[in-house]
Image (cartoon, rainbow, N blue to C red; front, side, top):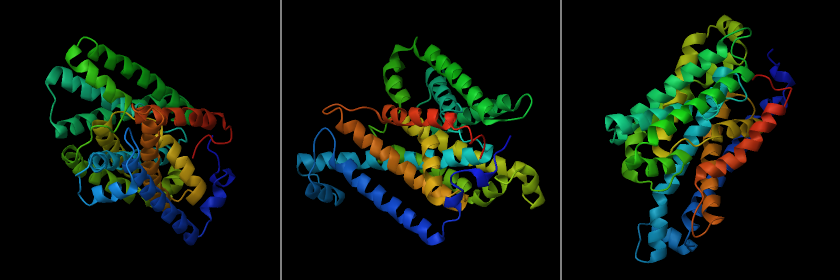
Length: 346
């Protein structure tokens, strides 16, 4: 049974004027800027703000300036991956009308992981562009499989059935990943670190290979905002308004899969960002996807950047990978969403 959107707690936010939403958008931009500066300043070696500004200007004469300079690509990657995952999560929730939809929970990230590790182990995959293509293929295959399994039986693709299908698929895919990696000692060590999810070791050269894919993914998702608003009214009403429901779903889902595939190829299967961020954003800007999607990208970038900074601070001089920090945040939030009896569908 689908819950009337007017009965949901964020209905009041949906009626907020554009001025309020613009203020929240501005606040999100300011927060992201502050977190990016914090990402340059904090780590195993603390860097003063004067050295941060000098590093942004290209200076690397002192150890502090050099440390800040090395953190610039890491910070940029955290912003890119966080924005991609936040936007992909919002689109997935809109396409499936499922409040539990998330690239990690629906098995999309793990499907991308299995495709990448299979390519490395058996086909000698090594090029950055190849990583992205293979990762997207795995993500798309997993998404189609989970949605097909979750649609079987009476009632179609309900949130609970999709979550169960995604969880079961993720567990099975994770086992297959382990089976592929264990006999290969030459790739096991590096892959275990990548599988946790992290943004360490980033470089602008590798990120350059991702930009075309990310540009396509962002464009497809953002251009689907009006279609997702129509889908939120239900398939029959959306069709009556002239929306081509199947095409709208395919285009939006394709954008989300491209973003997930590129993100996994760059930073590993980081979970829960796509689940937490859209729910937070709906409380602030409402359910209109024309506002929700760009806001989810900004907040996703902020969340992942903050998680990376926290992981570096709490374990000095070592660090905790960002995938572990987001899991500590997202797992309790997932349980909270599951226990909300009123929210059965978006």
